[in-house]
Length: 127
Image (cartoon, rainbow, N blue to C red; front, side, top):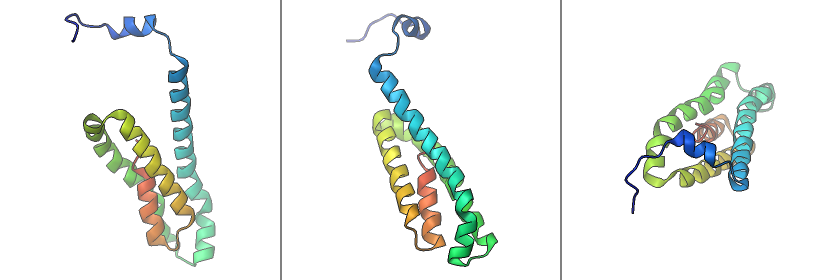
């Protein structure tokens, strides 16, 4: 049964401090965002090694380096409506899972096409 009076969110938040569980969730989300940022920066650091190891042209790395950003844009458009339908908790867990699989798979990519797809997947939940 719902209450008939509106709740002032500012007053509610002032009267109810963060619980230890909420701080844990906050810390875990911070770590995920930190790792996502590191992953985005790390591809720039390994780019020169990819050029040497795979013998590709510099211009071929452009789509690979930007794939995560395009994934981020796509994820930003889709994540909100999906979170409304499926729930925020489910979307958060699914996003971390997709990001983890994309990062792990990127380390074992056999060619630029595979790396580009995995980098795109890595960017999807980064919104």
